Image 1 (tube, helix red, strand yellow):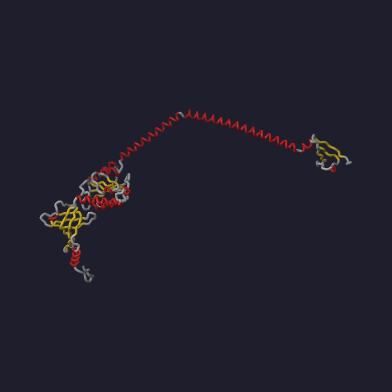
Image 2 (cartoon, one colour; image 1 turned 180 degrees about the vertical axis):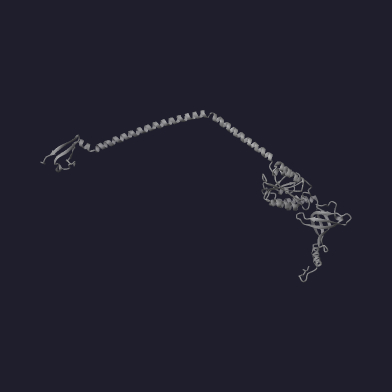
Length: 399
């Protein structure tokens, strides 16, 4: 198809552009489309029926017209269908719609088969792995709750949580929990709560319903959003027998909304009871310890006297033994000292001048006290020292 050659000086009429758009759309031909009926208007007596077909994973929809003869009575709003249609562009209104020639309702068996295939795919990617699960906080500051407006699930979660912990704080996001808008609204609410720094845990709650009603909670877009959340997510969908794929991806799967309330907050009464029991056990333990110490203290004086007496006896015996050893040591040292002194006295006696005098020798000194060392020095009176005293002698002239 040739490209339009236009300019500010040579614009083309609206009809030309509309016709070109129509020609481009017509080239698509017939296509098979899957979606969920978001709005259905049945007009009695009119051959053409109108409906809105919404994407199951995105907030995108298209208008569809179809003959009344191909629209089964079992098809209602919320039904997932596959239809064959040709796109039409209405030049007068400049709008696009699909003209359906065949509509097939997606059966329950086919839906379950698709869910099983999606379950295997996500499990293979590791979205169900226990290692990805985040632990639930013991005492959350604020609880994020995603549920239907004024629903029984909202009442069950809030009332049971506050019955267990009266101070529990909630940030509630009311959304559609079934139908064409459910996935989009739940995902947006999840992202808002996940971005709130005060929200410590997020609960996605809904009451029971048919498999078709619970399909939004097995939607791949929602499951991947829950897996990517940084805040722990609790799944509380339906009854105990309902197991949407959200239960496998969430960090904790509660069997019911009431069970979720019991899991996200502690029971204040139980905690107080446990605290009181711990206090009683601590007191009993301390009391038993005091009683044992009292029993020990009751016999302490006798034990102390016996211990002191034994200790003193031991110390006295040790002191006496030390005293005896000291005495023996001192006596030995004195004997050795006497022997050394006698030996030294003998040596001194042997080496002293007196010993020489005792052998008959004498020391001759002059009057000035100097010792006479030669006969020539002996003149006049001299003093002679012998072994037993000294005397004065007069030295005559030499012969």
